[in-house]
Every structure is written in structure tokens, then in C-alpha cells.
Amino acid sequence: MFDTLKRWLNHARKNKIATPAPELWARAEARLPFLDFLPEEARARLRALAVAFLGEKEFYGARGLRVDDDIMLSIALQACLLILGRGLAAYRGWVGIIVYPGDFIVPRRVMDEAGIVHEYDDPMLGEARADGPVIVAWFDGGPPGPGINVILHEFAHKLDMANGSADGFPNLPPGMSRRQWAAAFTAAYERLCRLDDAGIETILDPYAATHPGEFFAVASEAFFETPLSLRAAFPAVYAQLSAYYGLDTAEGEARTSGIRFATGTDTGNPPENAGDGNGGEMKP
Image 1 (tube, helix red, strand yellow):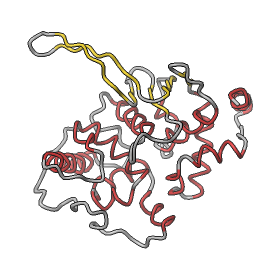
Image 2 (tube, rainbow, N blue to C red):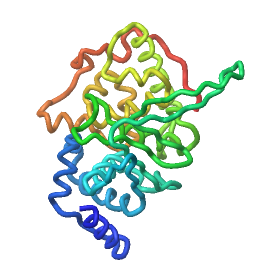
Image 3 (cartoon, helix red, strand yellow):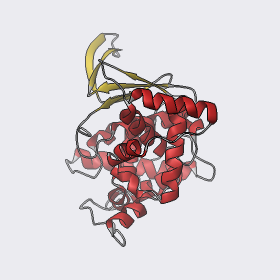
Image 4 (cartoon, rainbow, N blue to C red):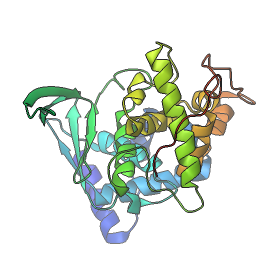
């Protein structure tokens, strides 16, 4: 199967066009039901972008994992979902994608303020490196838990890193306001931290409360996988992500689910502006 994919990738490089077998598309897309939230023309663009992505990037299996056609195409579709509105230039400057069979350990070595060096093992599902590859865990049986999509998460970090560190403030497309982005994300992040401190669950994984960059990545996961819930709980963040990614995934989920509309209280989460007050502002 790997050889089959390599053949049509080589064909794409030579002839600028390639079409994987229908059964390969069907298997890859069956793992990604949130692709149904896209309009039909966007699905076609996503497929073309995924083929181009596979022609530019290099995949490596870790711990003996054989990265086959299905894995590569699934990762490509999800990575390209984030750049449908901007194209492959958004991922320029790096080529490698390392895939682990499940979670993995990264040895860390840090020095504290007193100058003492601490070494420890950090269990991870993925890591995006500003100067290098994207590293992701692959689970044959699907994600390790509900609402967890390590591929969307790490590629969102990669977009965030295009202008420096992963701080939750990526390069914005023309027409978007940096001030409005900062206001929406800062208020939502501070609110999430207050709710997390109070032990109140939201539709976002608590990991989003650890850093503004993680909030952006986790919110991006929700934008594609559970957009109606994100729009109901964090409407200002949803609006910014909709403009940033150039998609209205909540309307797509409503269409596929037969829902006419979603209110700010239909998820069981506190509305975004309920008792929040005014938050600070993340520095542009």
C-alpha cells in the first residue's frame, strides 16, 4: 500500500495532478466525521491540498511504526483543514512529520531560578517544533479520548509559531483586527482559567488553561470537531476562528445534524459573558 501511495505522489510531482484510489479516500475520511461540516466545494479543495501536502512533506515512523497510506492521508487531510484559506505557504520552512505508535516520552532538562538543573521524562501525545518537524502520536483505534485531536492541535501550534513562539497570537489574514483577536482570546482565556480554578468544566479540555498558546490549539480542535458547542460557550472566540480559518463549521454541524440554530445555553456551559467582567488584553 505504501508503494501505491508513493507511485501516485511521484506522478503528482511529474504531472502536477494525482488521484488516490476511492477506497483510500473513503477509509481516511471515515475516521474524520467532522469533515462533513465542510461545504462540498471545500471538500474538493481539501482533497487537492492534501495531495499537494503529501508531495512536499516527508513522513517518518518512530518505534518501528510503518507509516502507511491511510496514516499519511489522514494526517494530510487534518493538517490541510487548518490551511484551506491560505494554502501550503502557511507550512513553509519545514518538511518532517514524525509519527509515533501511541504516546511517547520526551526527556527534558531545565534549569530553575536558583540555577539547579532538573531532568525528567515528559509523556506526550505530540509536539510542534518551531525550527523542525511536527511530532504526533497515532492510535489505530482512534483518539485516546473524546475531544482530543493531537493532529489538529499540533498543526495549530505550527501556524501559531510562524511569527515566533506559540503564544496564541498567529499571523492573521488581511482584514482581521489584531485588537479584536486579542480582546476575544484574552477574555476567554482568563474566563477559562477562573472556571478551571473553581473546578467548573467547560467544553474545552482543561489543558487549554495552562497557556494562551494551548488555549488557541485546544480551541482550534473544538472549532473543527465540536463547533456548535464552541460557538455556544465562547462565541467571540468562535467568530475569530471562523474568520481566521475561513470556515463556518458550526453552520456545517447544524446542517449535518438537522439543527436550525444553537443558543448560548444549549451546551450546559456558562455563557461567555456571564459574570465575566472585563478581562485584560493579550499583547499583539
